[in-house]
Amino acid sequence: MQLTAAPSPRGTNEQTKPKKRANIRIATLNMNGASAPTQRMNHIDKWSTIHSTVRNEHIAILALQETHLDDDRLNDINRCFGRNFEITNTGMSGNPRTTAGVAIILNKAMIAPTSVKTYVLKQGRALVMRIKWADAGDLTILNIYAPNERRQHPTFWAELEEERIDQRMPKPDLILGDFNVTEDGIDRSPPQENERAATDALRNIRLSWGVQDQWRHDNPSERLFTHKHLNNGKHEYARLDRIYSKRELANKLFDWKAKPSLVPTDHWLVAVKFAPKDAPLIGGGRWTWPLNARHDDPLIEKIIKKGIQAQIEIEEITNTPTEN
Image 1: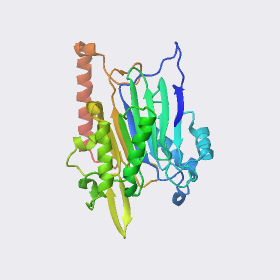
Image 2: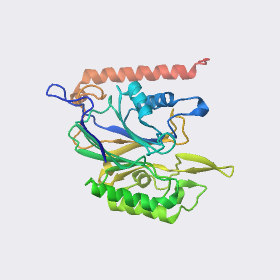
Image 3: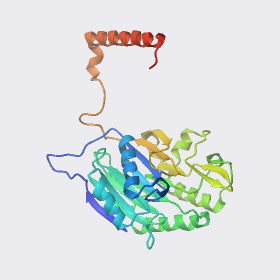
Image 4: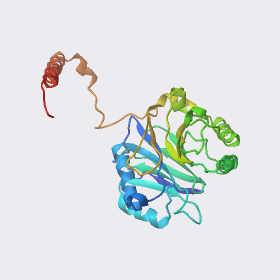
């Protein structure tokens, strides 16, 4: 089911062209519900923290899971934040306020697409966005909130593939979200076996789609957890929130981050920078010296003097007792 087929949120014409960026930050977060009753936050309060997170972390595209939004709540959020965001959400039929729900946010300050199309592969659990901006070509992003019950995973992935084929959609370039299962023992503490059918289903579909866990490829022995919960009075940790990518994008992804966010949730924010081919930055905002400045001897001399003076001041501060 296609939700939208719209041009750039800002619109374009011959006088106004979309901004081009050298890279954009793409992120995923399970927000654990539209509100946070234990912290006396309603849905507007909680989405205000999402708004701050997107701005502070310079996120261009954010995939959210467990949004718990119905049309009324989504309208409220659009009224408050619609000037800054384009929000596409799909909720569970029947009880959208109490379970599942996935959304994709476009930050208008960071990216101005020439084309955006979103499709629902599975209500409340799988949302696809095809986006085009600058000269970077199409990017297909799949936002996933996999079932908590691992026995449902083989059917879940099989239905997604069937729906993708029926809608004649390309295989995704990026798959991100909460997969509610880990593929490797290193991604859980204490280590434990997942249900084999669930991990096999995930592995088979990602191999079919040609995507891989690039962060794990770059960090084969590092331990990182994005979710914790209590089980029989003991804390358990897992890297449930991940970003898979096509193999050919490996050299275009960098600056991976996983960290707590302002949003009250039991999951961490996972983010990566994506530098598409042929998408240079035009205009202000990128801090760089002109290349010919390397041969400007008077300028170089001034920079050296400034650096020496700064170092002297730092040494004086370091060696002087102070209460500050």
